[in-house]
Amino acid sequence: MIKIKNSEQLVMMQKAGRITGEAILKARDHIKEGISTKELDTVIHDYIVKCGAYPSFLGYGGFPGSACISINDEIIHGIPKKDRILHEGDIVKIDVGARYRGFHGDSANTFGVGKISAEAQALIDATRESFFKGVSFAKNGNRIGDIGSAVCEYASSRGYGVVRQYVGHGVGSELHEDPEVPNFGTAGRGQRLYTGMTIAIEPMINMGTHEVRVLGDKWTVVTADGKLSAHYEHTVAITDGEPVLMTKVE
Ligand code: MG
Ligand code: MG
Image (tube, rainbow, N blue to C red):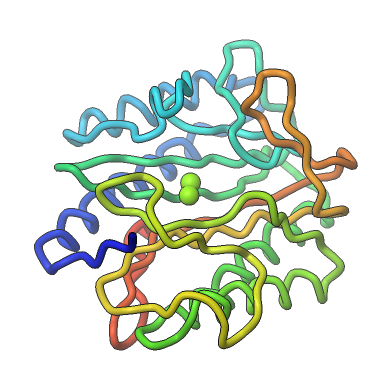
């Protein structure tokens, strides 16, 4: 069931979104060679709690971290660990949720550690751009397929693999609500978008194949071919006009 948010609920979502976006920037400022993903997770946890919110991912389905932190060929759901250390040239994906007064924000971004390859930077840039292609269709009256087809067309035309097994989603009083928001689809098809819907649009774009596999820890999703993957996500409110990016703070 799709939950349409009223204006008071949207105010809470905007606050949750701001905390989420700021937590990612806090973590970004700590990214450097030699830091562990657990240390980044602690930065995120402490910031969210300081803001009077709660890390949405902590304990979700038994997840042990406050953020999902995934390196290089890891696409999503990487578990923060003390012995998982960032190295120069890595790309790291930081995916954060914060719940504030009963509403969640959900956002992810990909950052380079020190100097990264031109290919890695191009993948990060294209992933971000594919989000903006998609979100430009996130308006009252359009359809979910308009978003996914725009994301997919942009990324595929550059030779990248678009992850299909994991998708975006509605977000609100629950971290994952209806509808699903795939990064592929057919323009003009799928669920219609209405003012007051809040959705997480989150392209996961691979350097090679779109195929994925899940590691033995039952969480970490990696590319099947071991090539790099990038992730970019914002929580978006549908309006009659331009979409509002609730987790975008800069
Ligand atoms: Mg997320
Ligand atoms: Mg999400």
